[in-house]
Length: 309
Ligand SMILES: Nc1ncnc2c1ncn2[C@@H]1O[C@H](COP(=O)(O)OP(=O)(O)OP(=O)(O)O)[C@@H](O)[C@H]1O
Ligand SMILES: [Mg+2]
Image 1 (spheres, rainbow, N blue to C red):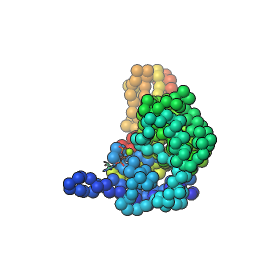
Image 2: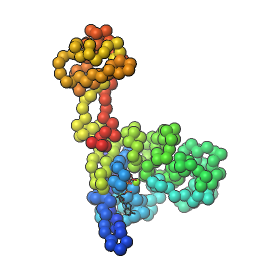
Image 3: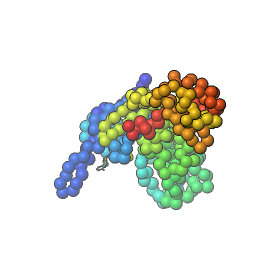
Image 4: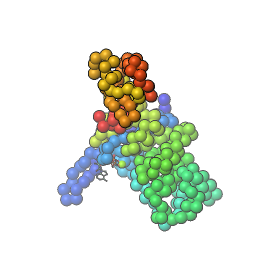
């Protein structure tokens, strides 16, 4: 596996206070690799140091210690930055420009000629699903969701091999979130490597190959979701939904023991079993009591639970 982003012992102290300066460690010895073609999720509570990490990688701020390489080159290498894209957390736009003008301007910064940059701007604006009639409206009149799309388009203007996204779904409604999600999934198809920070765990869960969890500036966990779940001691919980029987009757037909959790619901009955091997007993008991099986589903621990544990 080829490492595209290599972070080594990256550390950042901010100096705070005006009269009496003191140092606050925002990032503490982060080491992490992201491989070619991965969609990598970077998770952490507010203030965990996610944005700080991205800013360090983008060379917007400078590390107190450690370093990083992207595409095999040191982050101090300016030419390498032409091959990466970045969506900041709170994109600042020249808000008197229209969406189209802004993107063409970004293209100009990368040295594209007039024809090339207007082509790229139009391609990207339609790719991020900004309605064509909005292309020539000034950004100051845009909603947060529309700006977020322009931000994404901007991050892709140079057709980067690696894309860094700081909270790409923030400010979007459910439909917009879906679209951005599809867009990011599309980047994977094109073989791009994506490093994204998010609070929205469900988006990370469906999109990312691997995730890292940052806690107060330190790496708390890294791995693919299955690995992380195992490490967090995930149980083999299964949920069974049935109708036509009630908790008391069924309890009577089940072996003694606390491996079955029975709850009566409005439409019937919910049975949680601690292990898959106990499912058969429940089905047999249901049949005996005239109950009807509706569904059997494994209860996967979500990333959210994992994150909180
Ligand atoms: N310019 C700054 N000066 C001083 N402290 C800062 C500065 N920027 C960030 N910090 C502090 O560094 C820590 C990490 O902040 P950072 O913005 O990287 O967190 P984050 O994980 O991106 O949080 P969020 O989820 O809220 O975006 C926080 O405690 C924050 O207060
Ligand atoms: Mg942040």
